[in-house]
Each structure stands twice: as C-alpha cells, then as structure tokens.
Image 1 (spheres, rainbow, N blue to C red):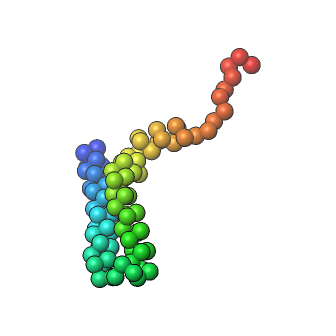
Image 2: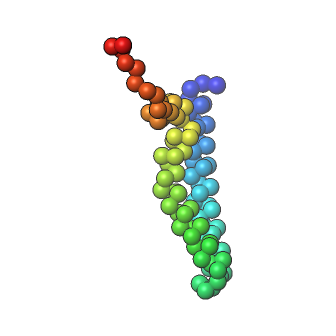
Image 3: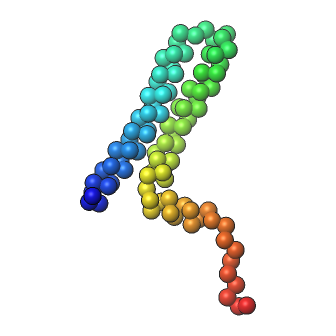
Length: 89
C-alpha cells in the first residue's frame, strides 16, 4: 500500500468517525422532539445530546490523535514519566 493510499484511508476513517458523532447528535435531537420536557428520559437524552454535540468539537483533534501513528508516538513520548538520567553520577 502506497503512502498516499494510507493517508487517504486514514482521512476516510477520520471523516467516518466525525460524521458518526454528527449523526448520533442529530438522531438524539430528533428523538427529543417526541418527548415532553417534564419526562425523566427527556432529561437523560438532553444530557446525552449536549455531550455528543460537545464531543463533535473535539472529534477532529481526537481522530487525528487516534489515526496518526506519528502523533500517537509523539504524545506517548510526551506523557511517559521516565526519571531523568543523571549523567554526572
């Protein structure tokens, strides 16, 4: 598989992940139209809708982190807690 094919596949996977969050938020929004605001499930669905709508804003950086091997490796190196090596001793 060429480098261009890998990049296109990664971009497609990122797009599918982002669109799935958009679709989930839209479906919950449509379902909420059939509930009355006093219903307990309305409150639950409302919180889920807020969470999925907020997640969409984070989807691009998170999918880039999830699907880019170089960024994953760099973030792992940044988050590893290794003790400093003392070269004087």
